[in-house]
Image (cartoon, rainbow, N blue to C red; front, side, top):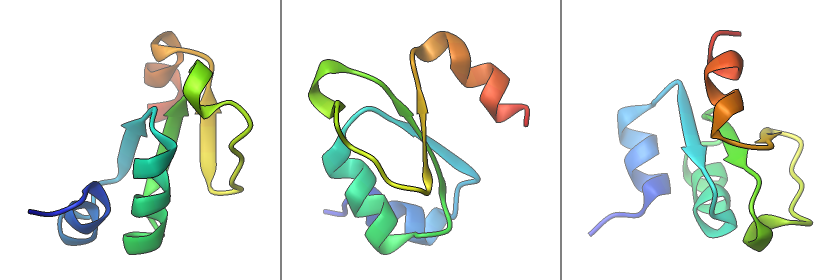
Length: 67
């Protein structure tokens, strides 16, 4: 059984869309070069990391992936 971070280290995705701080921290630890888009939710308020892009909702994901 592997974590999302371990999977990202193997697959090397260009970007990951996530809403869980637990998974974001795991990805940052195992695959630090992965672009992470964090969808804002009640349970991830207050989390900040300079390599994580926060998005207010899923509606904004397509715009950010095109950049």
